[in-house]
Length: 286
Image 1 (cartoon, rainbow, N blue to C red):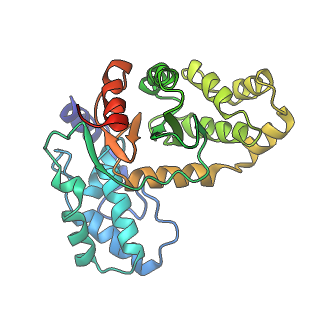
Image 2: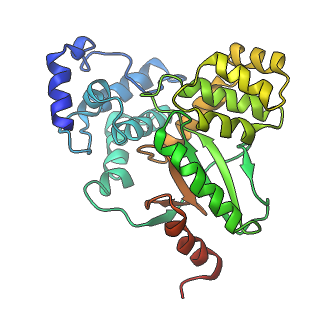
């Protein structure tokens, strides 16, 4: 199916932006790079291969398949390394030795090794001193994320003293209303109503218009004038982008993605599947 999509993309003229010469690429944030650093990043992106199985270069994959969950974090890694002043060969070495490349084609474990997941200032629910912290990277327009809401709510209910859930914004490029929804959630968070807006957005993930968001703001008791001003000013755009960048650096390939005490979880987000993992975190293997 994916091969068919790429052939149709070629036939349909989606190569209007030639990846060999393009100075911008879908989902790649070059902001803050010097001219020289950007040249290094683009050189690597045009020469290094994506490892998703598409047989394309990273820049080519970003143009032809912007939803690819492999080329996106690799591209973010390229930009990060170029920003430190590394030359192209040094950046390539980092990419080729990255976990993303090493794990390509291998089935992932249910829980990967723990990593540092930035969560400063992110909305959270559950006791601050919980023994298990779940960090969810999610997209308000993602149907799979909307299904995960119930399972995670059930998990919090099952472990009210031991589990804390942290929500991090990760709107996908394929969802046109997801970034505005993420900003709406953060605007609600500023008035202490993140989770109420969270529930409204997911309950209506198929109909995320600005007008509806303002209506929901009133329904959950927000100061709608302040909410609308915050939403329309783009006040939270930078925070959303920061969350996306952090997700890219963690190698996220889609949503919903959760980390359990810093360990990337690769199983289904269902209560029956998650409970044994939580028990193991609380009591160790039996």
